[in-house]
Image 1 (cartoon, rainbow, N blue to C red):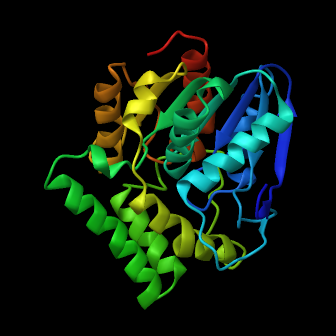
Image 2: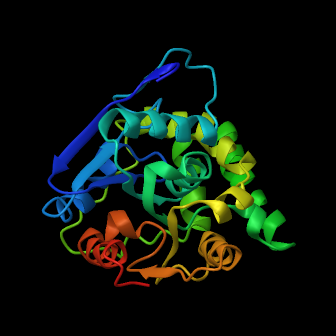
Length: 266
């Protein structure tokens, strides 16, 4: 990749399915979801540039959402000549939507779970949502990464109790600190500044399925997904759990994702 080297993981057999994690999530963040899909799909996960095993040549240079989408474009081009399935959550949904707006031929079907696309919100919701984003960035500057991520968790409605019994939560410990700091320094501001190319998405050959959490109707990212569905004139799909449903409820989430990819939902 120009300016970076990406680490990726592939498992399973079948059509290629790329999972793009939200927040500071790396390839491991999608491991449980991938495990429930690998019998039917070749599941691809990766570390975004700057996270975990992916490196950047200039750590001070901030990637944009478009930079991340270009990375995915090159990654897919290196691995397949066929259109892939793509699932993205939160920032991962924004990245995947940007990919489709620029390279629709690479994606046969995209499931975009609760993209934080504040441009879709009417006022005063739009200003309120962007204030939430800035508060998390400010908390990082004033305190530390853990305080900022807790701020994110609050406005994203993250409920650690809403998870499957065998899911082990990843603590906000020192092993996550480099990823959290990179996300808060570079990716969180990039998300706040990004604007979707709605005209390109409407013209894209890709089938786009906006997705929401069954337990997240109270958060603005859920509303963004529903408004995106209205803009595109397409139904949205409901998935188990909340904004972190793909991580907290991977078994049930995978079952719903199979139905969406197979055309049985929404």
